[in-house]
Amino acid sequence: MADGVAVARRAGDGPGPVAVLAGFARALRAAGVAADHHRTQSFLAALGHLDAADGRDVYWAGRLTLCAGPDDLPRYDRCFAAYFSASSAVRRVRGTTVSVTRPVATPYGGGEQEPAGEPGAPPATASEIEVLRHRDVARMSEAERREAHRLLALLRGTRQPRRSRRYRPSPHGGATDARRTVREILRHGGAPARLRRRVRGTRPRRVVMLVDVSGSMAAYADTLLRFAHALVRAEPRATEVFSVGTRLTRITPALRHRDPGLAMDACSAAIPDWSGGTRLGEEVRALLRLPDPRGAIVVIASDGWERGPADLLGAQMARLSRLARRVVWVNPHKGDPAYRPMTAGIRAALPYVTDFVAGHSLAAYEALAALLAGDRPVRRAGTARKEGADA
View 1: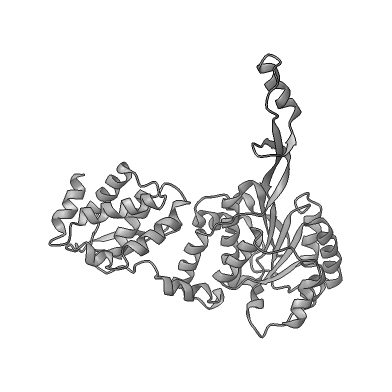
View 2: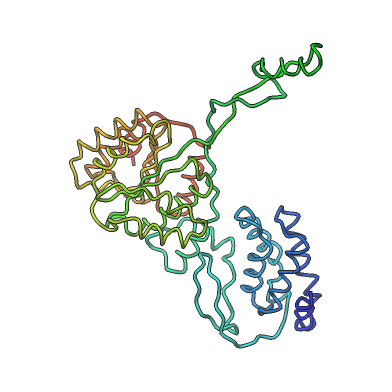
């Protein structure tokens, strides 16, 4: 707490900086973030070693000390933007700036050297994020792409529920649970007891995602893999991810790293055919030899440029549509109003695709996440081909 007092002494004539920061912690607790007393002390102590006049320092010190897990991060971002919106952290917590060079943490665990006296860029505002959500990933600057990757890491990859074979007790109706009812009667010495009931439980529906890493998808492959990482983190046991290029490669273990940067490094080491060609027909056939697609939602993220015979891809997609619960084709070029599905591969696959969606922006990935969560109705195969013809 002594370091926190040092912050107050450096703050000059500001309106009680320690009280302001403690109030921020209380706002976080009200929003559901685990910012308890010990975490608040760590927050103040961390700012004692940083520049309390720098909005980036305040943001990252709070994010690294007041958040207990990944579920707290979106709440923290919303509270930070709301709490410091009227007057920014630089105005509310004034202080002197010390000109030293220190490592600045990045969202993915990397680091870069930045002068402490240089005003750091605060987190993006709501209007900037809204513009960024609809921008094509291939046209983003490097800074915009980093911000987009940070937002993808916060994406909630909830999943459409399905009925499980297992039963669970139900206090509000359902089938009679004979075994539990008999045990209840025996527990009361044979006296009549209340009927016990049960219903089927639910489990998240499995998702199998294929990400095209060929040369024609180079501008989108990294962002699609980060979207797949968000899905794996949300439901590790109900998600399988494969890269497709000249071969089918399972990359689910690489994407189980909590840190997105480490996960992308592991993917780079695991994928042997980056920026090569695409043999979608052979790779879908290899996928069908595995038990993964049966009853799952299959997501294929590709532009449909096929080096192999298109009729082979069409035959394998027909088999896949009969086994999978749903087949979703994500094409980055579909976000362009002038796009027409003219390549032989995409034309062969569309008759067997349930949903043909765009995959070029953050908004498109959010819509895809909503689709996997069951927020959109299931449509029959063949509808996607009609949509592509009408586009």
